[in-house]
Image (tube, rainbow, N blue to C red; front, top):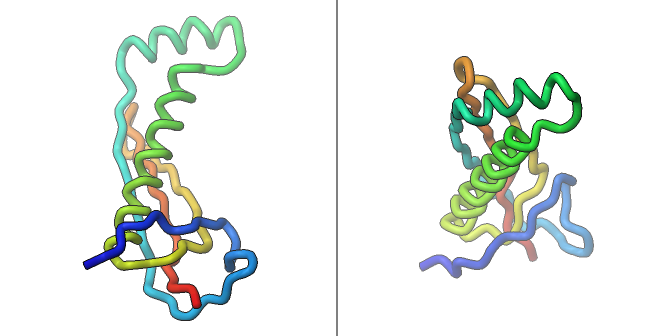
Length: 110
């Protein structure tokens, strides 16, 4: 039975003050999101004025958080203490549809 504790996450190769005991393997989490017509219309108008496209920023932030949560869940199921080398990949699947992938290496700490 897993201990269901959220792992420590780092974009670095190690966790400060900790020794990596073993590498469990790559863990990933993803989500695929579609823009909606309302966001597209608002973005078109905002594009004329310039500035941040709030609707798209919120959509990508939510997608990154969901992908990160799914990756953490995978790491918890593997009883990982930490995830190192965290990275994100964002890919346009088709027009208006984007995949956000969070991935890293799950490890056990001493």
